[in-house]
Length: 131
Length: 387
Image 1 (cartoon, rainbow over the protein chains, first blue to last red):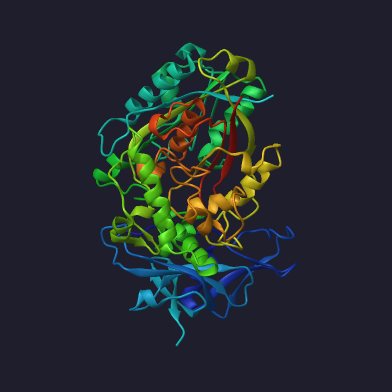
Image 2 (cartoon, rainbow over the protein chains, first blue to last red):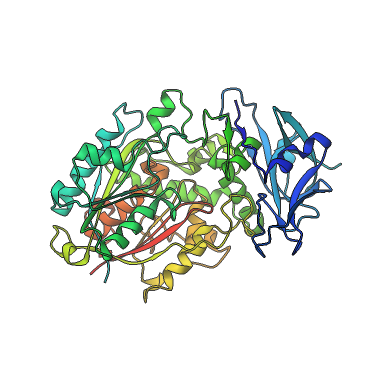
């Protein structure tokens, strides 16, 4: 089975925001910097005023790969993984599997929107091409 | 004052050898000691990367403790460095240890049994295999189904292709060129000629990387002896002076957040290297560049300053890095054809070249080698010089 993320105070919002359909990103209240992966201090100004806010849940593919090899016995292949520049969170990329019947059609610059799949207490982000 | 590599030893490498990691390690250690003209009792330090790792089968089955026990070592310095500047960290730490008087001769080792682990049905090379919860950067990627380093390297390659017009043909030149070297390397695990047609026929692993863009899991061990300056001069072979080291890292510790994913930690580490020497890239005779995936070779070439950003495809196509090229890279076949000793094998080959012991594939008069190890945010760089 695929391992799940260990939930911590700083990353729980990111991994559970999907329960309400929200892509939650950490921001520094002091300098407005977006912080990802989420952490308790701002790496730009060292403030600890870090808050978690929902962003639009859309973004643009910075890069991608189509995985063809089944790394686990139950893994269904092929599937695309997209590294997406997240709208409203400068410098933040969220890497997730793409929901599509045509993984080879994924491309750099493509617009994506987020959805989520629940696994135990975690809501894994997924990207879907915007039509 | 420089530290030096004075001995280097490899075990008999193989796929699915079934031999215990310690058997490989002991053989490599004996050979390294013989290479340096030292005995076990001369060794007073030990370093490794990353240390015993339980969470990725076969990736690092031995820690310093077991090796100290097995070889009966009495040490004044020991250290394993999972968070250091790549697989090269133990060599760097050993160099600093001998230059600060902590030890005279440090045994640096790397053992892997990934091939046997895979064959035994354990999922080698997958971080966190068998665990249910993951933290750190692997905890961001593996749950997203980005489990394999081939995925992470694949998306770097995809972005690089997009920006600079590189194609699989260029990566194929890396893979087939290194195979030509492997044909002349008795210990390499893949020695059958590899044509471009073979390369293209290899199944896709994680686009744009296919089977022959990925290195080969093996069982084996590699050992180096790093010695203090005066002690180095008394060893059997000419000291290979560690002319400079670079370990800078200016981006985050992730595989997907670095602002420009057509560069790696390599670029930070190599830039720092050249600040610490009068030597220039044009002075190099050979290079040992990390090739866990073929795409890392062009990225390391650019990081090392062998050509400009985006120019590596032309540098490769012009024949610079293969047999007979001006800047031969991974002359033992690299990990792509020689087998994954996790950078130690590449550095071993660089040492043999500088000692003039490479037989058919010897680069005549090789005196200065650049070593660049690691991929993604993981990077360390080193210049080795023979007087």
